Image 1 (cartoon, one colour):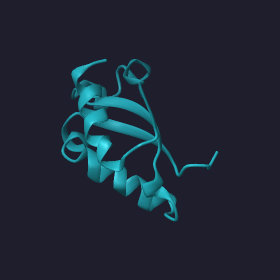
Image 2 (cartoon, one colour):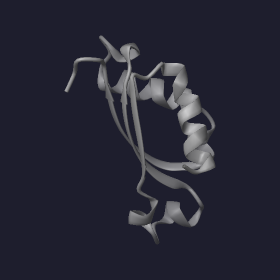
Image 3 (cartoon, helix red, strand yellow):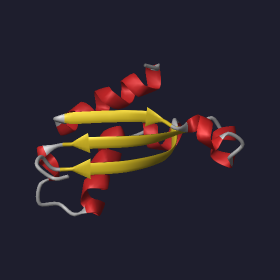
Image 4 (cartoon, helix red, strand yellow):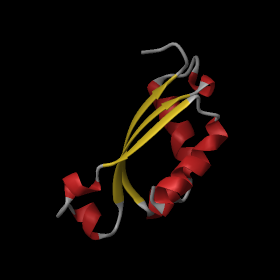
Length: 88
């Protein structure tokens, strides 16, 4: 696990995830403008009770809020699958 992945996991603990999977897909985007600037591409799957009763946009906003400055500096792209417990 890289230092950035560790920082992502640490910040997402604010959402008290029951399940958390992070995949670095940066290699799939080599040569992309964002990759040239050093920003990484990640795929995130997270299950949290804090998502219950919230729509997709509200769930993504919670993730972005938890990640804070990492979204502006270290992460160029983030594909998010955010679910409440019991959702498939």
